[in-house]
Amino acid sequence: MHELITSFLLGGSAVFAAAAAAFLGIGIYNNFFERFVAEVSEESAGGMRGAGSVAIRKMGSMNRRLMWPGYESKMRKNLIKAGEPSGYKPEDIMALQQVGFIIGLFLGLFLANGLGFNLVWALAVALFGMMYPNIWVSDQVKKRHLLISRALPYNLDLLTLSVEAGLDFTGALAKVVEKGKAGPLKDELALVLKQLKMGKTREEALKSMIARVDLPPLTTFVTALIQADKMGTSLGKVLRIQSTQMRIDRTQRAEKLAGEAPVKMLFPLIACIFPTVFMVLFGPIVFQFMFGNVGG
Image 1 (cartoon, one colour):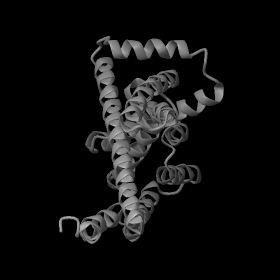
Image 2 (cartoon, rainbow, N blue to C red):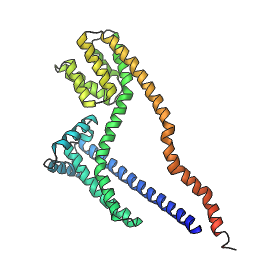
Image 3 (tube, helix red, strand yellow):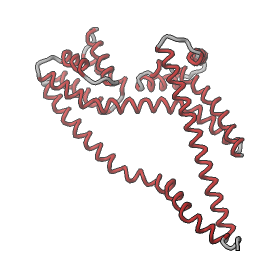
Image 4 (cartoon, one colour):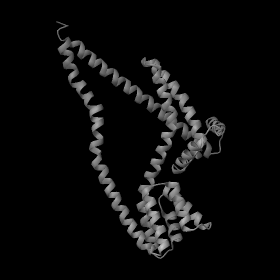
C-alpha cells in the first residue's frame, strides 16, 4: 500500500513537471516567434533590409516553386482576412514554417535530453513549430475580427447619424472615416471610400469589403445596405434598424459568453488547481503516515 501511494505521488509530480516544462517550452517559442515577427515587421516598415527579413523573403521566393495551388489560395485568403500582417505572402508563411520546424526540433531535442524523454517528443515539438505560423495567422484573423466587431456598432451609429443629418452615403462614409476610431474597420471603410471615388459602384465596393473581411455581422449589415440600395428603401431607416439589431445581438452574445464562463472554468479547476491543493494539503499527512515512525 505504501509503495502504491509513493508511486502515485512520484507519478503525479512527474506529470506536473513534464506539463510545466511543456508550457515553458511553448511560452519560450511563442515569445521568440512574436518578437521575430515584430522585428521583421519593423525592418520592412522602416525600409531596412535586416538579416531576418532578407532570409525570410529569400526563402519565400524559393518556396514559390514548392507551393501547391490549394495551400496558396487558402493562405492568401487567410492573410487578407488578417489584414496582411507584415506584408507577408503565402510563400513567406511557408518559410516561417520551415524556420519553425528547425527551431522546434532543436527545442524538442533540448527538452528531451534534459528530461530524459523519448526522441519522438522532439519530433512532436518540431511539428508543432512547423504548424505554429498557421496558428499565428488564424490568431491574427480572430484578433482583427474581434476589433472589427467591437468597432462596428459605434461606426454604424456615426454613419446613421450622418445620413439622418442629410449627407449622402459617400459623404457619410467620409465622415465616419474622418471621425471614427482608428482600427481595421476604419481602414476597410477608407478603402471602400477610395474605391467609390475611383468609380466603382456602391455594390461592388461593399461586396469587395465582404470578401476581404468575411465576418458574419459585417456581412449581414452590408447585405442589408445593398438590398436597400437596389429596392430604393430609405437608407437612414435601414441603418437605424441595423444599428438597433446589432446592439441587441451584441448584448445577447455577451450574455451567452457570461453564461459559458463557469463551464469553461471547470477544466482548469479540476485539472490544475484541485490536484495541487490536494497534494499540498494531504501530501504531508500521507508522508507522516508512511514515514512517521522512521525517526523513532
